[in-house]
Length: 270
Length: 318
Image (cartoon, rainbow over all chains, first blue to last red; front, side, top):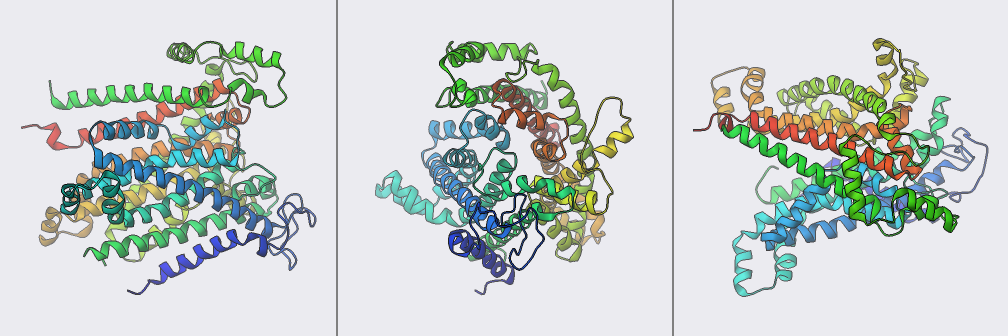
């Protein structure tokens, strides 16, 4: 099947951002905290995106910042997916009080908005990168749990799962060999959306001064550092907006395509 | 007793229980985490004496369960304690800010809800054609940008380039309603954009779902106009999901307010919370967290109850 144009564009930009994040050390023209000019220089050949509030090259800051943002978001997504999906499958396979306990705990955690919960926890925890990743991953795992439990409940009643049970397979086999492969496509599509959510979340926290701490750069922090310039008509703080929006849209396009492609395999919409 | 009343009473009881559990969670979140609260408030340079004093002041020498119940009962009596940083009474400093926040959020909701439903209806009416595409693309773009960036984009274009609206939302006592509305115009624009996308997309999906049912096909075969079908046949049956969508987004609005208030320096609850998180003022953070959780749970509860009331099978039992 041919890839639709929108998915190809999405895939291209997603790859571009991830590539820039991975190879930041090679492609960034200047160092992360290197002061190379006056504050808020306009766009020029030497500084394609100008300089920031204390004269650091903004393009380099954006590339280094992208590395931090994408790394934190990806790590949180991986954590939330491993935790959420395994617990979700377990709840669906085991049922009974394990299911009740896990589901009610998740209901409870979701009764507090994520941002508020994160702020409450970060008011006493030291704000370091591992803490941020764990807090974001745990809060997001609740959403993954709901989805993977819902998907797995439908699968556990299938004949092949019944057959595996009758063969005497263990729970671990049923979860990883019977349910996981069949639940993979909706989970992968969801993963894209959760990743974007994590990018927005870490950017918001950094903007509020409670995320990635200086001198490390990240996209939310770049907005925070350059927000005073806006009033004088200097658009430096808007560049991360562009980066976050294009990354979000391209990952969304890829996720849509994955979801469409897998539903059409089952004879659904084309 | 009428089964609807029983169901609603059950939901209310469940909501209260959830709020109680949420208060436990907020308390655990700030108190029993690894590390000592007093230590993390004072940082590395704390002397043993100041640490001991702060522990005494926070009541940290008592067991956690006792502290929780003390806090809970005081909160139930309207005593939220005093802020660590300035020693002011939390309840009184929160009162006016809560009013400001609710004012901002309700103005945004009054604009966003009808607009989102209307756009959703239009998108369904012209499904797959250009009005649908335009609405869907624009809302996807607004959903993909975090609130604070939307705020700065709005400031850059509306306040700095075209000078339509003020860039800071300063409100104070004695302002007339018109002045207040003008002052908060920018945060309102941003909040509307933030929730509009979600609300419109979910409304569209809810109505499209109903459009696939047999009675809509019958209406189509009767030769009714497309808009009549949507307005008369599809929309009433989509009310429960649409109200659900609206309530979820209002709950989302309550959170979005936190960030937007910081951007526009608006004296509301959100700014109060964020300020005191960075100052590690635990009592204020707990109180704010509880208020936000209560509003959030309350709105979700209303959504549940409206869904029950909108279901004719529950209203008229056999």
